[in-house]
Every structure is written in structure tokens, then in C-alpha cells.
Length: 373
Image (cartoon, rainbow, N blue to C red; front, top):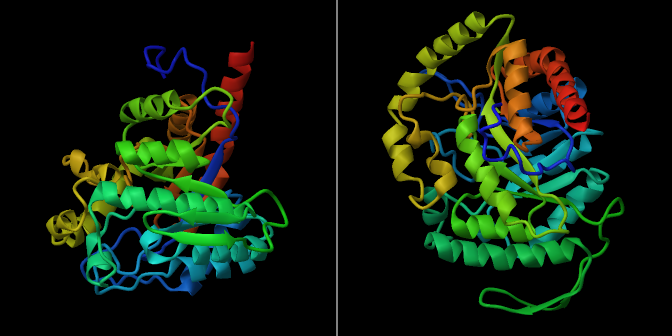
């Protein structure tokens, strides 16, 4: 990356190592055509997660929905039961379960989190999501308040959850919750508490990330558009606070040559586009128009996407060397965690682990040596 970057002369986050994760297929395969059904049962997810662990991935994210946001008639995985089950059938990989705060009382959710923390022997993490998909909260009767009101509720909720999973006694009398000398036991037997991830790019979201999160996940987009986001969030961090881990999402397609990878992406887009073309406007209408992170795809209308949350926008498509260089460029601006989607999942995530991860780690190690010399 050129030294003209606005972060070129600022200290970058170095407290978090390079990490690779996968999106669990919570809504099924990432590429589907008009005649395909989305299979999102736990058996499929178990195979994918166990494959990722064997291949050397560090983490897996299970997104949380009650209705499939792509097609309400198709199946969707229940994130928290799946996370508990995945914790029991894995040994090393971190298990992240997303959560929308309006679905669970914080005292109940914190107890569930500590339960999965125990099942996993200290490998569990929460991904706080303020909610963006209106139908599942509106149709269920739970309700979908205005954006900033949801963040006020979510901030109060997450402060309680964080205190409880740390083993603290909580007494609060707030706008939404009242707890009286409430404490959970046992707390984590393995560390201080489960890790907290969060997304969000609006001003209330960024304030909450800075206050309460350990890692910030950015929906994938081109590198040059990630730089100002990183600049913004790092500028908020007070000196002496623990470094904030930064992550980005993206879809990977790696081959021996750039030409092979690009041809395969075009083939997949030709399969997928008729399926999404019929749903795109409806999907757009179901997204809260103040949810900045979820509007990413609509900001790049001439760049069709494959995969979860930004998909191909970050540019992780090309030869093994090209993709490794791209990952190293993102790491150079402070991104340490890459939450990736693949198709077909098992074959492609194993290909990535074999051919790209070693190359990316070598490039990042070389960058560190050059910086130190």
C-alpha cells in the first residue's frame, strides 16, 4: 500500500495477530440459483465448522436470524443452539454467535453465553448486532424501534451483559431494565469473560463499539474505503486502553492464476444473479435505511457481490499470491481478523487454508521485519 494512506504515519494495532475465520452457512450455500433451495441445518453447519477447524481457521461466526433475510420461505439456522452444539463438537476454533438484544433479556442471554463458554472451554464470543432486518422483528410482534432508540436500548443491554459475564453483581434501574443485586455463577473458568465483537458504522454504533467491544467487524468493501473507517474508529481510542481488534468480511475465490479466479467468479455470478435480481428491491426495502453497515452493497451498484456482507467487494479474488497480497494490504492498515465466505464451502475453505494462509502469514511477517529494521 502506498505511503499516501492517511494511516501511513500512525501507529497501527499490533496487539492482535493475523486471524482467519469463516461465516457458518446459517442461510445455506452462498451461491444459489433460481431452482436451488437454501439448506441451513445443523448437520451441514457441523461439517463446515469441523472442516474449518481441521484446516487451521481461528474462528467461526454464526449469524443470528429468525427469518431468512434472502428468502423468508427458506430455512435459517438458529444461532445460539447451533453455537452450543458446535462448541461441543470442536476443540480449538473460536465460536462466535451473533445476537440482537431485543430478542433476549440480558440476564438470560448472559447466562446462555456463560453456558457456551463452559461447553467450549473458553472459546466463545458474542457478536452484538443492533438489528437491521425489519420483518423478523416487526412480524413477530417484538417491534422495531427507530435506529437511535435501538442503540440506546442495545447499549444498556450490552453493559449489563458485559458486567454479568465478567462475574460482577449488577444492580441497575434503567429505562429498559431493572436488576437487583443479580450475579451469575459460575463465571468463566478459563479467562475473565467471553470476547465481545460488534459491528455498526453509524455514530451511535461507533460509540458503542469504542465503549464495550473487543473487536469491530467491518462489512467488506474496497481497501481505500476501509481506510477512513479504521482512521475514524482508532481516533476515538483513549491512550492506555486495550487495543481494539479490527476485522473485515469478504468472499474468497483463489486459483492458480488471476484469470482462472476471475472466470470462476463470472460463472458464479451468472448462476446467482437471476436469483437475487428478483429479490433485490424487496431486500432493500427490508433494511433499516439508517443502518449504515448494511447499505454497503447498494453503494456499489456496478459491482455484483457473492457471499456474506460485502462479499467480493474487498477484492479477495485472484491467484493465491494476489489474494495473499490483498490480505497483507488490509493487515497493513490495521485489519487483523478476516471473516470469510466461500463456495463450495468445504472445498474452497480448505483450498484457501492450504494455499493462501501460508502466503499471507509470510507476507505479514515480512512486513513486521521491515518495520522493525
